[in-house]
Amino acid sequence: MLKTTLLKATEASGKILQQYFNGPFEVSSKSTVNDLVTEVDKRSEAAIIAIIRETYPDHFILSEEAGEIKTNSTIKWIIDPIDGTVNYANGIPICCVSIGVEKDGEMILGAVYNPFMNELFVAEKGQGATLNGQPIHVSRKTEVAKSCLVTGFPYQWEDMPNNPLQMFERVIKAGIPLRRLGSAAIDLCWVACGRFDGFYEHHLQPWDSAAGALIVEEAGGLVTDFSGNKYTPWQKQVLATNGHIHTALQELVNAK
Image (cartoon, rainbow, N blue to C red; front, side, top):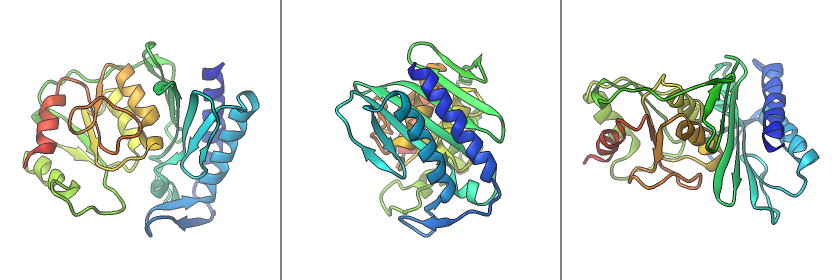
């Protein structure tokens, strides 16, 4: 029943994203001028929450725009109604809905849906990961130097040692292809299906990575923080790879 509700909510959100794509719709800023929220984010979020509430009125919900809807339930829905809002607001179809389900502190379900590419990624703990119903697996590359990587940058710049620009420079100087799509959830899913071999980002929120990280793990990959600690949605730093290049990429992003 959990998975059925997850897929129903994901599909409903995807239809809303398609309906309003290319506007017009209202756009406003949050923490910075380019940290955007649209009225479509809010419509998508409302639809997702309503569907969850139909079957599970007592479940805990954490959503990007609504924040925490607290209950005593051990099951928590972690929702990003549009991951890649800047892309969406500018008519760039690299964006998605991302919904993860956590039970007793462990991610058990995740779905990421990009309706513009008709790609639905789903994972269930211990059951593998799929793309449009077909099993997916991470890539088999064993050398980071021959890998294709993806990353993202924070909207609020942190002038700190080993900051995102310094990491970016090291990877580029090493001659490694590095992309920036604008949606962490899609980045993670594309690691899961082998399009990318690794992903790293400095400053993510739980709704950015919860579903995608489970999809990577269930596709055979590895997800940690930059120090190699086991992934949880509550960490800011995320390093996800096919597993084979994980140590090498970790050393590269942490190099002084």
